[in-house]
Length: 391
Ligand code: HEM
Image (cartoon, rainbow, N blue to C red; front, side, top):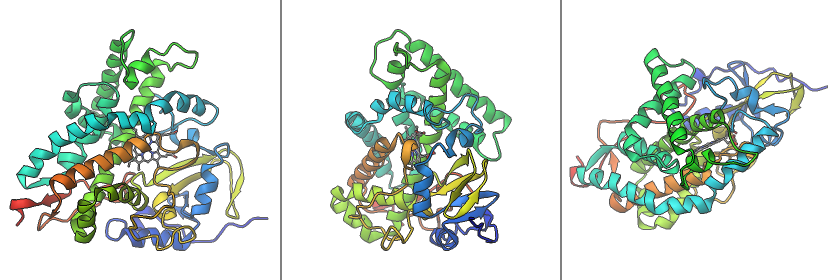
């Protein structure tokens, strides 16, 4: 018979994530591979994460994500096989490396337009001024929507994220989240019968048996807002905070931009911003020698698994030539659909920024602070100073 380890349960609030992330992830690994946290089973060991991700029949996403505050089911994350497969087949062509590669030049131009005035200003809040607007612009570009909607999208995105968060949305935010649905619904209607290569136009005009319904398209739009904007924003926040503090790393990257993709991988490995990813067991099962009854909430902690000494040598260090894979974009059938796009965004931002602003530091007197506990980990603000304006 299997055993249930008798460990004291932890609370998220006990983890020192805001003050010392390394200590927090290490504390979980020390108790791993499974740790009881706030009534859920946290999966922190690399091998256990691997098992969960590759057994979607036992570890269900539908049961885990079906309840998040969306008025329509979130496509494709809230589905299990076989439905999930249909969505991935429809969506995969829009997120392939080749298709993402075709967006490069347009995105680079948009970035130059964002970064040049910031570079001239000599200081900025790089989260507010660059890391927030750029992913929203990418979303609009992908869907073939006007960039002039960026500000509205950012507002709606905040409302949608609040609605999906533990505290829920205020009345004003609920109204704003609904505005996003109205907006997407209108755009879907406008695209019917229209020519175009963008994701929205192609999906709306799909006449195959596999075509998505209006409700499914809205669910997809909702998930993309939830999954594809603040994730990139937060990862960029970690990048700039780290580079502002680490002159050696900053200098190496600025001198040799071919090192940027290796840095991006390490960034996502060490700071996987979609911090906790849930599943719910569909049947009684055993994981790492522990009985898990049907209905158990199981939560993957990528940041811990990505440092697991069983897999990574010197796992807490940034090594630009490390070639092991990691779980920062998840794994198995729900592996991040937008990973190529996210990598491209991160890479482009860093390349353009380091070209225009190779040297920078945190604005004296400011310290980026991580709100904690949080579902999505990220600095709300990273103030930088550079060039003539540095004090
Ligand atoms: C650095 C940025 C990003 C990170 C760290 C990230 C991380 C993740 C992770 C860990 C998952 C797996 C969730 C699970 O297993 O339940 C995921 C799924 C997903 N991500 Fe990302 N993501 C990022 C950017 C993006 C972008 C830019 C998009 C799209 C525009 C996107 C779209 C999605 C979608 C649609 C899924 C669900 C896939 C499925 O259920 O089959 N993500 N992401």
